[in-house]
Image (cartoon, rainbow, N blue to C red; front, side, top):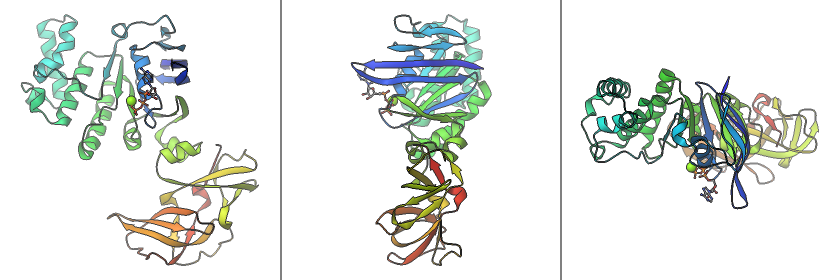
Length: 355
Ligand SMILES: Nc1ncnc2c1ncn2[C@@H]1O[C@H](COP(=O)(O)OP(=O)(O)OP(=O)(O)O)[C@@H](O)[C@H]1O
Ligand SMILES: [Mg+2]
């Protein structure tokens, strides 16, 4: 059942709608990622949900009740939501314990109850040993956990996270992704998580909402978004892909530039005329030898670049017409720049795009 509902949600700054007619149902207890490039309206959407700003149009409902509409918005403190900002915003003069206890003290809980709840959350977030430290004595990841503990301790109904891992180094970021998912599984708060990092979204989310220029481009499970992108924007934004533009010549075949005909195993076949096909880098087979059935879904090209990346090699291959195709191959496939190769595009890996 939808718990948080955005209905035609719109926010204009001046004449520009930075959030434009957004409709989204967020299930109770689910973790939803808003994913998109810088400036697409993610933070603004989160601030609208938190109640820091008021919509110009549409409304927000929580548990069936309207909490935001133009000229009629409940204040943030009446929403039972916790928002974590990118900058942690910990109190520097308070210890970890005091930082986490702060929200409970504001809510006038008894000292004993505060101790029980803070101890519990410090243990869950693996901070018990650091309770008496000050923020300046903590690593970035530890500060991040304090900020999470502080948001969780008040038992919000809804947790709003704005790029919560963006200040951490790559290793810590990866570790914290799993941590956030683990905490979510433990508490099942309805969570909206803003990020522009696709692997962060893939690791944590039940539902990924890809935003573009204030609107929703596509919403679906991580697998949906990755395997079944509907638009060129989503295909490019999530995971590396090659886009081949061309004209449809039969029910499922697209004639692309340079003589490459791609039979598509999935996607949108409704389009007529000009269309596009997406093929992921790792879904293309690279070989020095001509494939046996090569009338469609294969083409010869020339290696333009080859990079050794430890786990695999990254190839850029120029095909007739001058287009380049990016693909990967096992480390053992080491073909030098300038050599002719064959690219094979299995139809099941070719996806026709609707837009
Ligand atoms: N108070 C404001 N007044 C005018 N324009 C604003 C205001 N707040 C945000 N914007 C504009 O709205 C657009 C969306 O901003 P928002 O902060 O929601 O983007 P974002 O998706 O969170 O981007 P990022 O990934 O860079 O954080 C941007 O073009 C931004 O400049
Ligand atoms: Mg932002």
